[in-house]
Length: 56
Image 1 (cartoon, helix red, strand yellow):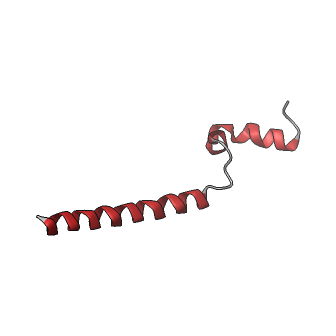
Image 2 (spheres, one colour; image 1 turned 180 degrees about the horizontal axis):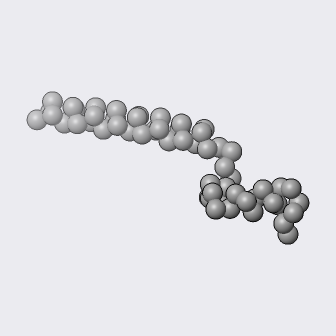
């Protein structure tokens, strides 16, 4: 029983480490996005117009 518990703890630790690495990668990859609207592709023409000074 003790061996099974230690194996379970090891598996949980490995899964947590993998998940932490994934979240770390995601935060580095998307660090330049400030808000969810930055990811919204429907907003792309409007954002381009704002940057060019063509929108209000």
